[in-house]
Length: 371
Ligand code: NCD
Ligand code: ZN
Image (cartoon, rainbow, N blue to C red; front, side, top):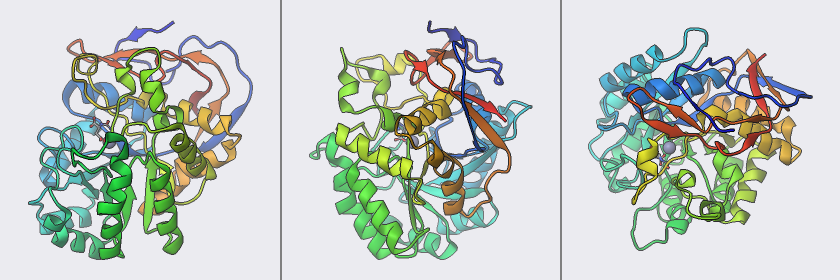
């Protein structure tokens, strides 16, 4: 049965209604290299889910207004830490939202001081809260030079915003129009192609990585490993499966599966968990974003298990990301057990807003716990 639960969940026991149990898989504690926490009551509601599973997370800066200064990042980080439950250890890694007016000096100082781990490039109007994103890469050439010199990673939302380009083609066209020239013009810049959804992106990242390991990586979400574009319309329109980049054809989902479960260096875990109130999703013009934080590791484990690649889960979830970012791997471990349970369909934020979880209608095949 699906349940609505209060935000004061017991974070040590997230999976209700356990039905059966056998084998277990232990890995180093994973990190999430792409999350949206929002702010205020929504943030306080969703942070515990991520903090419970992941030791660190790259926090997206697309607040309203976006995180464009060192001070804004410092204070946002403080608010996130205040929302972390006492019994878990969690480190938010902050990002700078690039605009046409980003100050390279401030960015560089923020990176040097450890406030920023990376900077995020949203093409203007590509997705939620991206109106003040970058209008043209040429506008930020100086900033990119500086990032390249400093070794500061650039995280890219890889979709063109040209309204003439079909929404399902926006990532592939972005590679040709923006990503390939970017890589050519800034050969030493460390780039993460965020939430890849196409075989073209997988192939592009792999080729760049093979030329120069550590130079380029890609995050892959749990939901893009599980759904294709037909699922968004299965039996009727399913707003909770609408996200950007939108899920593509089955052949692309299979390419993402192969990339993630290869365990190869360029591919690492980034959920892109992106909570929106149910009312903002179930409406005439609904927001893009899948909220997967409560079920993230359970769903990744299922995907890897379905492909008989559980042995590659640790590389994808816990090793490749730190290697790319030049950070230590986590020393503690987590356990995934093959135990079937019902997912919780919705969580409740203070103020009465509900947020629908990915997999909320489905049974989870795996249970997550700290070892
Ligand atoms: C994200 C959001 O809601 O902030 N939405 C999404 O569909 N992924 C923005 C983003 O990462 O594109
Ligand atoms: Zn995102």
